Image 1 (tube, helix red, strand yellow):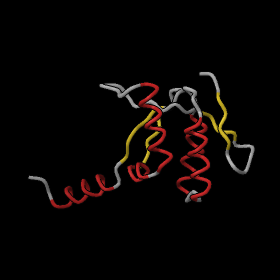
Image 2 (image 1 turned 60 degrees about the vertical axis):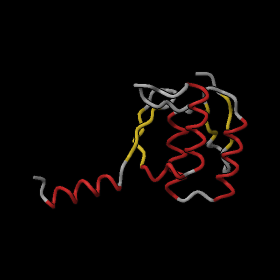
Image 3 (image 1 turned 180 degrees about the horizontal axis):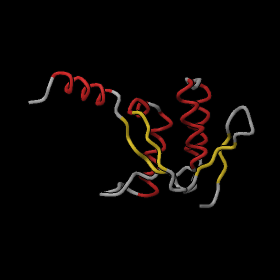
Length: 116
């Protein structure tokens, strides 16, 4: 029989769950399940499905490089302004590359196509 303390620990772990994705350059990211509600993350999943299909037994691979993924995660964790989120979404959806990279030199991130 599982103790009450163990059940509480398990419930907390489930509430703060995470998922794992890999970037185009094979970097592993463990991301909070809360981020699945973000439109940018959902769009990256949609593009990933178009580019790579739905994985049967392998990892989920996003069509973005690791530094861009780190940047997106940092923006989301800081509370991305809705207008910046919409601009980023429009840039991502208009990109037809198999690898998306962000140009972080500008105050408003812009996407450019890179070859992987």
